[in-house]
Amino acid sequence: MTTANGTKSPSTSQPLLPQAAQSLVDSVDAFLFDCDGVIWKGDKLIEGVPHALQALRSLGKKLVFVTNNSTKSRKQYERKFTSLGLDVSEEEIFSSSFAAAMFLKLRNFPREKKVYVIGEEGILEELKQAGFSCLGGPEDGKKKVELKTNFWFEHDKSVGAVVVGLDQYINYYKFQYATLCICENPGCLFIATNRDAVGHMTDLQEWPGAGCMVAAVCGSTQKEPIVVGKPSTFLMDFLLERFQIDTTRMCMVGDRLDTDILFGKNAGCKTLLVLSGVTSMLDLQDPSNEIHPDYYASSVSDIVDLSNSLTKGQ
Amino acid sequence: MTTANGTKSPSTSQPLLPQAAQSLVDSVDAFLFDCDGVIWKGDKLIEGVPHALQALRSLGKKLVFVTNNSTKSRKQYERKFTSLGLDVSEEEIFSSSFAAAMFLKLRNFPREKKVYVIGEEGILEELKQAGFSCLGGPEDGKKKVELKTNFWFEHDKSVGAVVVGLDQYINYYKFQYATLCICENPGCLFIATNRDAVGHMTDLQEWPGAGCMVAAVCGSTQKEPIVVGKPSTFLMDFLLERFQIDTTRMCMVGDRLDTDILFGKNAGCKTLLVLSGVTSMLDLQDPSNEIHPDYYASSVSDIVDLSNSLTKGQ
Image (cartoon, rainbow over all chains, first blue to last red; front, top):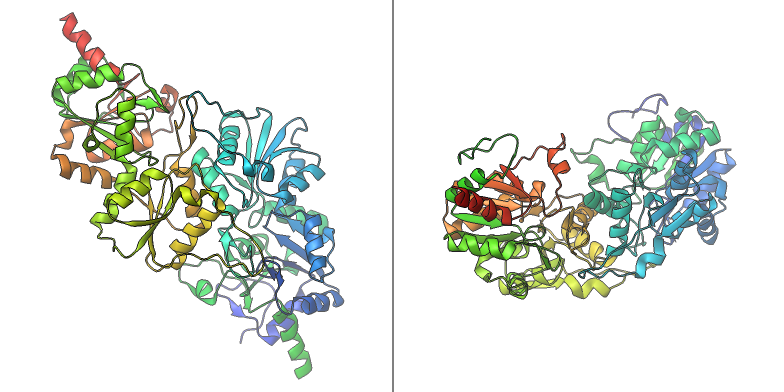
């Protein structure tokens, strides 16, 4: 077995065996966790997570939760963590809903302009908290269109950005609204919270992710969005400025190769794929896969259990 | 002015001046017309169309109507033509809804398998007429999903093809249904009626086209569809077998470069862009545009009016 050397990413991934787990824990100051498929599936905690997080905290590790799921705000995520018996604070949570708001804030998006949202409450809450005026979201979920002669679909000309995230209340009205803003309002930004194809919106199944709605808007506008969630570097840059930790002493733990692992690798973090979510061993080992994490394990609890087994064995 | 030589397509497009119009009419046996933006906009006829079609018919020209709009069946289009005062028969109409049904028929799609539809009545009618069992369509427009613990979204394992077209009743339920069929039913086909970004669903405005829904399903499945409408060659091959006309003696008349004109050029037809629909002179002359029709004119009536002006002038 090759032990982790802590300096470079191998071209193929290694299973997280006890020695590698110990080395990982020793060489990392901050663990970045994806949530869906890593901490929970839908509303169900993944086994062993509370114990693992507690153990890492007791070793003085910083824990950060980075989720592409934009349906909730950081505050709503804090409540979800609490409801599942996990003690996580808003400051430790970085959701793509928050990233969208921070992107507009750092870009000095004019306060007199509005933001049209395809997405759920999380995006609206974060945008409002950052001081922006929003339209759309769940409210437009019940709106219908009439494809009739002389009908004119009005849209607000003061919309200067469209944010698209996962939206279980998606409809044709929203697609038309977003398309008109992006194509007809001069300089209107097209921002995607993320492009995940699917996600564990429930514990038992995967469902279309933001990548579905984002692709639809690309399809009608023929334009490409600015992505603010994983794997884009925007969220990492923001996070690094907040925490001031060397990325080589950070480990990204996730269940998706094309978002979580790529996000970690792009930033120079160590990377650990957990097989508790959307990616299987078959996916990881598929010859067409070009994204190789440093390590893979069955779930988050392996980090602590495997390194503990070594300590106990010595 | 360069006259039409009837043999090759110039790298840039020429305005349809009187002599070119005469030469076009003389050298063409069949005119293929797109409908939205060419014959009508929404439910309004484009000026001069009845006269132009009548004049071409009286010259013995075969007229064919090829539309990517899958919301109607050929029968429904026939009724639309009639309601607008145009005498067009079902046999002259080739819609992408019909193309989807013909694709499955020519591929010997098993009768015991079902077809899931994202789209409207036109697709369902054509599929049923061709003898296939369908699910989805408008009926699923009112269905809602519940993203709750222990909820299991059932889908029919006997679905062997998903057909995606324009759907003004699109929702998350349909995206999940289509995604599960394509990803989980072995060998399930993913068929797109077309990929038009937008279309004149009403006379006054453009609306997201099938390209919007198709892209969304690509986004959630990470798969690419088989396209049966314009500009794919499927519809043209089918049409040629039906009519047995040399493609060099055919002219495709359309308002879209990336579907109509490309469709005509791919098949070796003459091509005429009319500016009565989604494409403007600016779009045509944009340096990024790589699709150049042989001719462009303001509308269908120019074909006849310009060639007549020459006859009268002689």
